[in-house]
Image 1 (cartoon, rainbow, N blue to C red):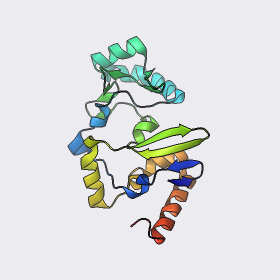
Image 2: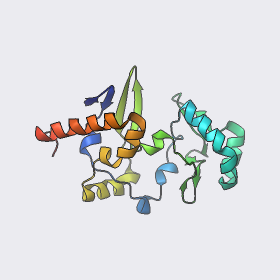
Image 3: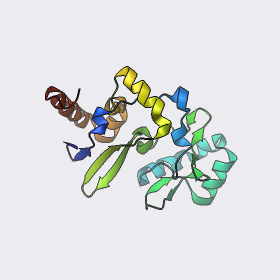
Length: 179
């Protein structure tokens, strides 16, 4: 585990390779799983503000779900998550990807999952078999999880935090802990 500011970063985030290969997976992470994407109250409000504009692009099943329960619900673990069709398909997934003009941070950060731990935040690399092509492409390109997710990590934690993460990684490389 690495400590960057008040964020605990699992070592896998800086050692494992990853680069989404959307051509191969077709965004299956938005279709599969047992709950919607984790969202904050602010993100729910933002989605609700976009809803009138999005409504014509939502399929009938998504519209029915949103009419019944809203844009989000509380999952069995007590987390607020985006509404889903059936047991897995995100209501906001369109033919060409996410319909939201700004995806929830949990979607933007994937395959990193964020977990609150008291006053600290933990970042873990979530491995999923549907992302095997992303691991292959990341390995081919020499792109680590944190490098692939530079933009969303900066969006979530800020430029200074990301620079500190890069400094920690450089230090670990110089000491031979990361190749």
